[in-house]
Image 1 (cartoon, rainbow, N blue to C red):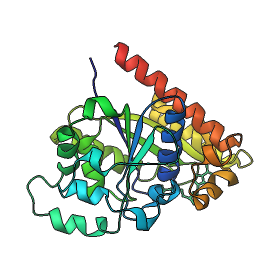
Image 2: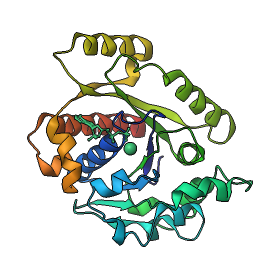
Image 3: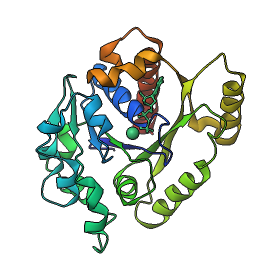
Length: 265
Ligand code: ADP
Ligand code: MG
């Protein structure tokens, strides 16, 4: 029997592929369905925090405090405007955390240990989504060590597959060392533009390479999705009806279906 939250890290070492957008909107969609969701912002840039309306001045607690062992995960979580969705914000302190913990024997296990020590681990949240920086650095490794699974956003562009093998290799390494149960949750194609023939070719290539791991849902390129963060809102709150929001709701229902299957197994 599975207990506690499902911990999913949203990772891809490429920047600008839709990690943060996916973390925010998938989390919001899951919360809208009634799940209790926590986002952990592990990117020093703090885009997930800003995109959820958490002002830099209001970040007295952060994922930095969790990684350095100063604070329990649930104590660093702050509520967002989305009912059922909290976030552990990130601050620029995270930039220094690699250097700070690089010499510690448990440097890759900081987040995992914090999650395990968390008193309400089982009761509080049904999903924890981790938003990673665009790098396979110590922060991303911490997320993979702590997670049950990895969700990979891939942009529908010519170089989509480039770098994927390196990412999958890293997942393998984490699985073979510190986290044997880590799996690929799924691959979600983002910023799809149907007018672009290349985009269709890319989706086809990724499907033939990764098979069933690729979600049926494809996230379209949608200007409303890109506008939302500047209003401090997930696209789903900013414009529920837009194609991007609808796609993220559909992605959430795919994830829930996946989880039901897993839990029944
Ligand atoms: P990452 O976290 O991987 O760096 P982001 O989620 O921040 O990527 O997305 C990169 C940029 O693309 C952001 O400006 C974001 O608003 C925009 N973007 C992401 N997804 C979409 C989409 N489906 N349609 C339009 N713009 C998008
Ligand atoms: Mg990001």
